Every structure is written in C-alpha cells, then in structure tokens.
Image (cartoon, rainbow, N blue to C red; front, side, top):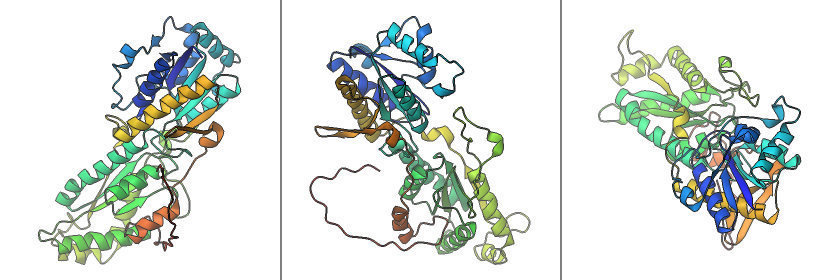
Length: 401
C-alpha cells in the first residue's frame, strides 16, 4: 500500500474534513502517500481523464480546517452500478492504476456505502468511514452530532419568535425514514412535540397536547405570552401509515423520493383542528388574544432550515470521531483488511464491521422514546409506559448515540 485515494460522497455534513485530515495524517505517518479524489464517485469514474491529483502532503494537510463542515474533497451523488457503461469498473481500475492508487478511503452514508460495497465486490480495495447526519447506520456516523446540535440551537432560538407572537412553531428537519436527528435535537431543546417516522402521527393526540400546554402557558404568564414548539422529521407518516411528502419534489439519483412537506402538513392538520374546536374562541378571549376575523385561532408557522443544519462548523465530537475514523481506515488498508466500515477507535482497539451489515438502516429505539414521554414530550401517540430494567455497569463503558 504505497498510495491511497480519499473520497467523500453523498450529502455534506460536519466532521468530514476531520475524516480527510485524519486519513491523510495517518497515511503520511505510515509512509503512504494520500491523494484527494475530487467530487466523490463522479471523480472516481473520471479519474482516467485527470492530468494530476492533489497529494495531501503534510504541508497541504495543514491547510485543511477540520472544524469546518463539508469536505475538502468535494461530493457528488452517483450510483456507479447505474452508470450506462459496461466497462465502468475497468475504467475506474484503470484510473486508479494511472495514478498508482492501491486502495480507497471512502466516507459516506448508506447510499454511498452501498456503492463502496459494490466497488469492493468488483475487486477494488476500499474501507468505509461512516458518514451521515441521519445517524441511521449501525455505527455512529460523522455529521450526526453537528446536526443534532444545530437543530437544538434553531429550536431554542425560534422560541424568541414564538413567544413574541404567541405562535405554534413547526421545524421540519432532514432524516428520511429515521428520526434520530429530530428526536435528539428536539428533546435537547425542550421541544413540546417531536414527530418521527418510526411513530405514525395521530394529530388528534398532538392537538390535545398542544391546546392544553399552549393555553396553559399563556394563562400563567404575567404578560400573557406562550408558545408551543414542534420538531418534525421529513419522513413523517400519518396515523394510518401513509407517507407525507410533496410529490412534486421528484426523486434523487439513487431512486429515492425527495421528502418534503411534513412541516406544512403538520401546520394544516393543527390549523384545521383549531378552527373546528368550539372551545378555542373562548380560550382566545380568556387570554385576551381574540379579534374577530383577524385573530381567532393561534397562529401556526413552519420553518425548514434545510442545509443550514449540515453546513458551517462541525461539533468537536464529530471532528474527533472523523479524524479517528479516517486514521483507522488507513490502518486497515495497510494491513489488508478491506470491505469494512469503521466502528471506532477504543484505546488500542480499532473496531470495524462488515460494510454490508453496517449500512443496514437503524431506527430510533422506541423504548428510549418512552423515557421522554414519561417526562412530558409528545411523540404523536398516546404516551407509552416506560418500564426500566436496572443493571449495574462494570468497567469502562463506551457508547455512541
């Protein structure tokens, strides 16, 4: 293993520059020359056409700011298997041979990870550093902590607007069919309701919780101010299990529906119930908010931060994990262990698992949800009873989200 290529793929997020920098630093330490393969799998496919590659020498690596989100290596969303070229794998191998690249460090999520598995099965040596802000791999993935912190920050900051206007605010966030970031970010910021794909949402339950908590806050306030905060994951399902999304959004390059519209749908459902509830007029009058034809029900607004939750700066946790994952990937390549995904470095143990297993989608643990239901958060269902089992921990415990 004399030369390696480092590529990142899929969506941008926090910690990715940590992966690039960690992999390059470890490679240089081991006498391996690391190169950036720009623009993800598109760059890998077109490697044969490139005249030069950037070597991540110690001097060049020093210019990478690991604290910035996004990737110095660039991204694309390309599924190699779908490229209409019968010699696509030979083309990739020839491109690697042209630059003397012996193996690849690939950082990506489940889609990008599936491409990595495909390349490995075609005889290309590669190791996967897990990356997805959705946190839905079997391992911890770079980007999740950064995104969760930003979601919590935005929910907390939106409370100033909500309190000023006595609004119900709905924040719609990424996550596809796993609600990890909505769940963790929402409870961290004391959101009143967190609606995730794992729990089909009964809007009658949400409405009852919203109505009681919202008006209670206003009536108990010496300035008659109150709010109600909802975090909703984009992969929202209705109580009957139907998916909520905007069909006009289309599909992505991997064939997935582009999910959008969950926040808007939540606003419509709650607005409909406020308008139909005969008690609302009296409650609005009781809180001195009622103005006929102008302010008859609580105002509900939705906000979609979109890419703001994945850009900017990384959390320190993601930078550290990213550096360790990148470094571990290089160490595994050097010893000939390929086709695997990094779990993490635990002291002297470099832990990994088969990539096919690692990219299987992991969902929110509903027993964990019940803990927060016991504390008063609404998850769009009747609260489940939390039944703890107590266990004494022995020795050093390492735990990812």
